[in-house]
Length: 237
Length: 270
Image 1: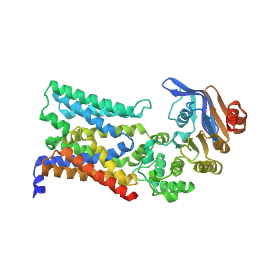
Image 2: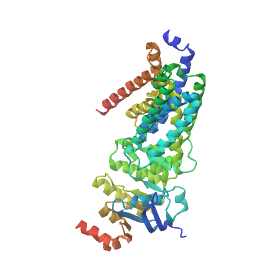
Image 3: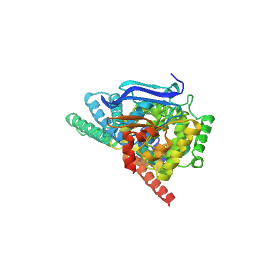
Image 4: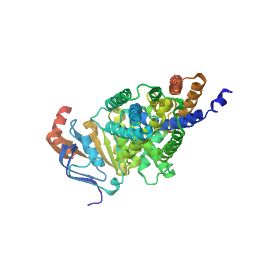
C-alpha cells in the first residue's frame, strides 16, 4: 500500500438494514486530494460519508483506512443539528472539544491542546470570538467554529457534509476560499458533499457523481464533458 | 426558632440530605438531557418507576430492588429509540409513560386500592426517606459527581455533537448508556419524596434556568447545580413552615426562579 493513500474503497456496497444504497463503489482518496461528492437527494452521499468515517461497516467489499484515520485523526464537519443552534457554550469550549481524540486528555486540557485550538481559531479568523456564546453567532461564524474544531481533530483529511447549508452567498464563498487555502497551502485532503455545484467545482479537483443508476468518478474537466455533467451544464445555461 | 426546630426531626434531616443530593445529581444530568432534547425521558422514567413500584408492592418485594432494574431497562430502551431515525421518540416516550401509569393503577386497584401510600407515590412525601435511602442517595451522588468530573469534557463533546464525537473515535454509546443509568437511579431515588408526577422537574428546571443566564457550558453546569440545591432547600423550608407537600413546593420554587431568570435575560437583551 502506498503511503499517501488515506482511504481506499474496493467494490464497496453500503446501506442500512439489508437494503443497499450504494453498490460496487471503487474510490481512492489520497493525501492532498480535493474531492467533491455530488448527486441527487437520497442517492447515498451521506451514507458514503458515514462509510468513509468508519461509522458504517460496508455490506460487502472493503474500506481500507490509513492507520492515523483509524485512531480518529479525521476532521468531520457534520450537518448542524437543531439542538446545536441554541447550545450554551463558548466558542473556545466548542473548538477545544476537537482535541479530545488525543491520548492523555484527563481532567483538563493541556497547554499544548489549548494553544493548538487557539492557532486553528486564528487560521479561520475567529480568535476575537473566543469567549462569545456559540448560539449568538451568525451561520457563517458557527460554520467557522465547527471547521476549527475539525482542524483540531485532524491534520490530513477533512470530511464535510453540505457545509454551506444555511449560509448566505458571501459566507459560502469565504468557506470555499478557506477550504482551497487549507488544501493548497497545508496539504489537507478535502472530501465534501454539496448541492452547490457551481462554486464547489471551482475549488475541487475530482468529482464523484452518485446517480440513481450510474456512478461517475474523475476530474472536474472530465465530469463537465460526461453525460451527468452535461446535464448540470445545461441547467446552468 | 422555627428553622432550628425544623432540623431537630430526624425525618427532616434525612429529607434534607437525600433531597439536596438527588437534586444535585438531577441537575447535572439534566443539563445534558435537556440539551440533547431528551427532557421527556425523565418524565417517562418516573411514570415507569411508579408502575414498577405498584407491581413491587403487590408482589411484596422491597420497592427499590424491583424498580431500579426495571427503570434502568426502560432508560436503555428509550435512549435506543431516541437514536433511531425512523422512530418518533416523542411518541415512544409518551406511549411508554401512559402504559406504565395505567399498568400501575390497574395493579393498585386489584390489590391495595387507592391508599395514602399510593397518594405518596404519586405526589411525594417528606416522610418517605428511610436511612437506607439516605445511604443510597449519598452513594449515587458520589458516583454521579465522580463520573461527571472525570468525563466532563467527553460528556460536553457527546452532548454538543454526537456525529463528530463518533467520527473522532469517542465511544458515544457508552456515554449515553452511562447517562441513562444514572438518570434512572436518580429518578427512582428522588421519586418517593418528590412524587412520580413531579420528579422530572428536578431534571429540567435547573438546566433551563441556567441556560437563560449563562453563555458557557461550564457556567450552565455550575449554575444548574447551585439552582437545584437552593430551590430544594427553599422548597423544603417553605413546605415545613406552611405544611405544604414538599414535592410541589420545590417545583414551584424552581418555577419562580426560572421565571426570574427569563425576566433577567429579557432585560439584558434590551
